[in-house]
Amino acid sequence: MRQHFMMFAAYNQWANNRIFDAAATLDDEEYNRDVGAFFRSMLGTLNHLLVTDRIWMKRFTGEGDAPTALDAIMHRALPVLRMTREAEDQRIIDWVGGLSDMALAGRFAYMTVSDMRTVSQRLAPALAHLFNHQTHHRGQAHTILTMLGKPSVALDLINFQRTPEGRQYA
Figure 1 (cartoon, helix red, strand yellow):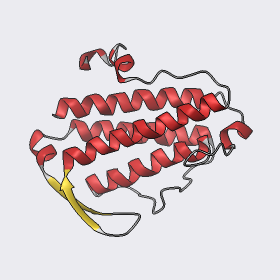
Figure 2 (cartoon, rainbow, N blue to C red; figure 1 turned 90 degrees about the vertical axis):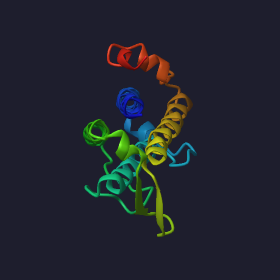
Figure 3 (cartoon, rainbow, N blue to C red; figure 1 turned 90 degrees about the horizontal axis):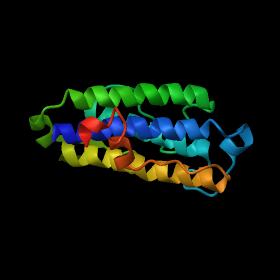
Figure 4 (cartoon, rainbow, N blue to C red; figure 1 turned 45 degrees about the vertical axis):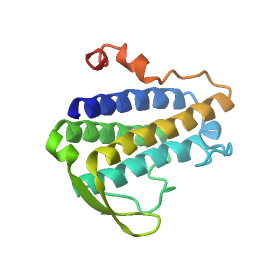
């Protein structure tokens, strides 16, 4: 099971890099434009992904800063947001790499952000949610790009598995 999550941590990093490469082609107006997406703009969507990863990693590890609002803007400037995203992706990879199958089968408890209640659940399904949530919102970022007339970005897991860094998971 650990290898499965290692694959998703590496894929997550790869896909985030591709989305940030594509976002870097946007001018400031496009990057900030409210296109009606759930988090309005590319700025809002990319920040949301970082916010929620920080929240989940705080829940998982008990360490790090976690915003208290799902729509928090941690960084407005794309280069700073990207550096922070890259550091968070590496943090996720390192943490997942240190997990044992026993830890993945275990439970943990945390407080929700939206309605402030305590939840106890197994770690593996919660970690699967973290990666699935990333995929969901990267899809929205992809849609924002195409709405702005930018080229499509291939983000399929199989494409990652065909890269040099992803072949070990194929």
